[in-house]
Length: 353
Image 1 (cartoon, helix red, strand yellow):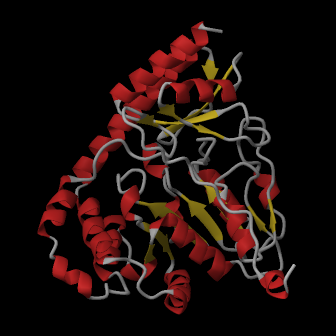
Image 2 (tube, rainbow, N blue to C red; image 1 turned 30 degrees about the horizontal axis):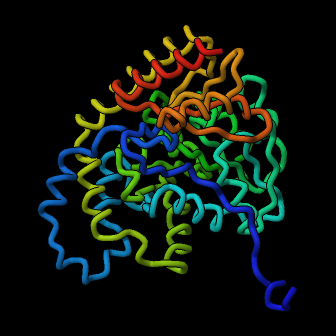
């Protein structure tokens, strides 16, 4: 090994979902929204003045911050925006987790958490979820350097109610507690309402799922003004111009159209509940989902075999070759047509066994 190689930071990277580009495929593996963004986003695209691209965007992202603050009835000083919730979460890890005590997050959860912890050299412990993929609150009563909870959780789709989150916050008032709510709009109750009660709470959400804008990369954090100020200080010390002109303008339009937002959410929820019923008839079981995906296992057929069979039929779902979840498939809720096609292929695969 050369001397310079010894000083390279080496980490095991996060592995994103496969992004195939095959004619006629059905893509249900990365939890994207199957419906287009709000109509106002398209209008903003048509009206966007390309000459603006020669100018730097507003480093404060004021137009989007103000729109989000208005939507959630918060002060703008309580809102932070970034390039997708991954960027926001990474900034939060960098900002708040600088203790020599370990941070805590479940053993089965969003797999970027341990990647960031390794990257930023943050000690961590991953308490095990129970047999129903639920968190055990007593695991989070111990001394720690911070807590991260994906709620609803990914990839399990399970949801902890607001009393559970309040309980964790009450037992950890000397630590920052991050609640990652990428999927909260699909059936849960947001921890945002706890912000006035707990000054150590940071709630993170995204435009990628419920607002159909994964391609724009917009995420945000909500919390008390002191937390938002320090995370902004880190941002300005790292990269002042994180949000581009188009993301700011299109993001504002996405927030404005609440009626369209609710219509899309309800369509996804209705499709999800219908598909769960049909999959159970085929011998599948899954946790009660509060997300835009299903985390399913079959009573007889290995998940990897089903994953391969679906792929051969140009249907892409997510398979995790990891302990405790290697017999589950994570299936994004698509359009009714896409899900009917999935059910038809699954029925054929089950019959062929």
